[in-house]
Every structure is written in structure tokens, then in C-alpha cells.
Length: 241
Length: 322
Image (cartoon, rainbow over all chains, first blue to last red; front, side):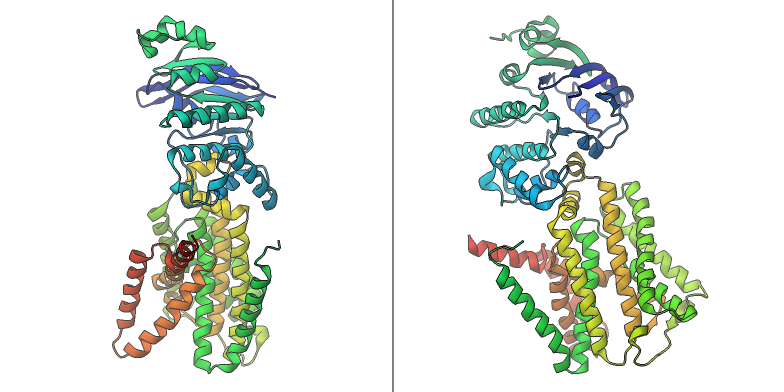
């Protein structure tokens, strides 16, 4: 499987460097955590990778192929799926149709798309809600739906933007299990999350962004001990156990 | 394909077709005309609905496609004597071409909602003014299509029953297209675009291409309706083809009946058609009053039934089942 390579990626909005010369690589089956204070450029980085914004400078490679300049739907076709921080289900469509629309990304035949969507709904724990309108779901269910819909496009890479934020501890636990099950399917995951306990537990490796720049990367234990990370994000009193 | 309800549905369709076939022979000519207009606006509404309802790109200028269809077949017939049946196909292709022009411009520059609506209106007005000033299109006088008597090959007949069956077949055809779109990938993609374009892109929908596809299909079908109109009334002028009134008539039925549903437009046509006839019959002496009633009903539907009559019925039935 090809790896996703980010080289020297930058993006500024007016005078603000939202992403500043970021370079990293993610390989097969990895869970990469992306942390940093609010406004540090995490979501912008996702928007650059998924083609919603063009980068000012830098390169993005999937294997040998450059992704810069491709439209979001083309990037989805190449196997990079994303969820949105503020979930965007199709509110007036049923849960089933939300997922089926995404399943058509790889499957042109309606009956097979139906079957795939059904099995994904079961996988994501939304089977009983399949005929409800997406707009009537709770936040936790909408986040599950967002994930199921993203999976339906059959990605090799998954960009998860705060899928646990706003969930209660029980829902968070279910979501973590879901993310780990997704990794077991061989999908590489880049995850943005604020809850340290979660990110430290599920990530194989962590990248810390601050004011658009990368200030640290490494395995969770290392990053938590890094003085710069403690100073700019975790806070002096933080102790990772 | 076969579900539990299939025999019931087959029976329903059989009964519907039987009634539809027998009806014009049993009714006086005036009622046949009313039926023709219901089917005609049902046809146009369904065509509009593909772009405006399913894909959520609200066109305020569908008269542009309608008029292009009417003028193309008519000009070909009047100048070169080519049958309007063939002209109809050319009209449809011209409608597609116009859709390609409008769509590639508007969607490339990301016009949405009211801006797209105004842009389509501008195109319709543009065409109205061109046809109003061009010798070729007979200026404000319009074009009178030469009478051929009972000439089905020239898309003309003295009996309304001929036109009834033509529009019935056209309507069934467009209904089939709408059902096909509604149930498959294109319908899902259109709905995704209507609901949230960013999300649609994120799940692999080429939003530009699918919006363009919507306007091409819709433009083609609407132009066919234009040819039917020209052959039924045997007279066209810039106002009735490209006018704002026509654009409004086209989208009124899907809005009243239910946007983005297969049966919404025909339900709207079934309600508004007879209603228009009755109010005109009763209040015909007071010029324009029937239009006021029309307007009041439209306001009422938008306020009280925002999902249209079909959406309301659907919710009502589902609500009862639960």
C-alpha cells in the first residue's frame, strides 16, 4: 500500500500562517494522532490534504502521485476519506441513503451498494436507525453516521476530525472501539482529538502542531514528556500516566 | 426487483392506464383539454423537478429551454418542411446545448440558490428579447404554424384525443426517467448535492459534473414540452414561450405538489389545473382574480405545507403507521 507523504506544506489566510512548512509521512495501518491548541492548523491541514483548499506551497503525495490541485471528489476516489469537525450529514435523507450515496463512490450497482451500506450500518451500530432521517439523530449518532458514510467510500486513509468531541464517556468508549475496529480493517487513520487520554491511548505516533508549525513528533510517551509540548499545549501541570 | 407490494402496484398501474386510455373517449372535448393541460404541466414540472427538485438547483428561467424547443421545431418545420417529430428531437438537443452553456457558466463560477435562479431568469429574458427583435422568429407577431389538417406525421390533428395520447406517452416517459433517477446512484448524488455540497464532494461526488448532468436532462425534456406546446396551439410568440409567466407555471406545480419527489409535480398539476379552470370559470368576468386566488394558494402551500402536498401526505401516512 502506498504511503501518504506531506512535504513542506504551507497555507496562509491573509497574514496568518495557518499551516507552516509541515512535513510528515503516514504508512500502512498506522494511527497518527494530530494534536495542538485551538487554531494551530489541524483542520486546515485536513482541508489541504482532502483538497478543499489548495496549499500555497508544498507537496502531497499518495505513493508516487501528487494530490495537489485535485478536487475533493478526486481525492476521495483515490482513497482518502475525511469527516468534518462540524458533522455534515445530509439531514433530509434517511441514514441508509446517506451511507448509500457514499457507497456509490466505488460501487455503481444499486443492489450491491444497498448491501454494502447495510453491513456498514451494522458495523457502525446504526442498523436500528437506518430509516430515520439523518437530521433527527443525536450528536453521537451523527458522528457515527459521518464515520459510516466515510467508510462507505472505501478509503485507504481516513482523516477523522474530532469524532469524539462532545460525546459522553460511554459514547466515547464506543467510538474508540469503532476506530480500532476500522484500523483492523487495514485502514490508515489520521485523527485530530483534544482529549489526551484518548489520543495517547489510540495513537501509534503523534504530531503536535502549534501556530501552524510542527513542534514535536514521536510516540505518545515521548511527546507527552517534550518540554515544548508541555509549555505550549499540555500545560505545566500536566502529567501523563 | 419483486417486492411484497408488487402485485398491488401492478394492479394500480393497470387500472391507471385503463382509465387513462378510456377517459378521453368518454369526456367532452373541453375536459379532454383540461386533462391535456394537467399532463402537459405535469410533464414540464417533472422535467424541472430533475434539476430544481432533486439536484436542488432552483431554476427561475426554465422558459428558456421551453422556448428553445418550441422555436427550434417550429422554425425547422416552417422553413424546411421537416416534421416537428424530428424537430422535437432537435429542439431537445438545442435545450441540452443551452443547458450546457448555462450550466457550465453558472456552476463553474459556483452560482448557488438565488444567484443561480436569477442567472437562469436572465437567460430566459435574453432569449425573449432576441426572439422579440429577430425577423427569423417573427418578432412580436410570433409564428403561426401552417395547418395541415389530420396529419399525425406532421404532429397535427383536429382531434384533441390525438394530443392527449401524445402528452400521455410523454408524461409516462418523463415519469419513468424521474423514477429511474430517484432510485439509483444519480438520485442519491443529486440529493447529496442538494443537501450539502461539501459533504457531497467529500464522499466522491463530482458536484460540477452532476449539476451539469441535471441541467442537461432537464433542459432536453423541457424543450420537448416546448414542441408539444407549439404543435398543440399551432402558434408561438416570445411572451408565451420565453416569458417569466411560463417559467413560473413550470415550477409552480412541483413546488405545490412536492419538490424532489417522483409524483409531486403531477399531484401539483392535478390540483392546480382544475383549480385554475374553476376559478377562471367562476371569476372569469373579473380579469386577473383567478390569478390572485392562485397566488393565495401558493402562499398557503409554502406556509403550511413546506414539503408540498406529497410531502405532507407522506408524513401523514408515516405518522399514522407509527
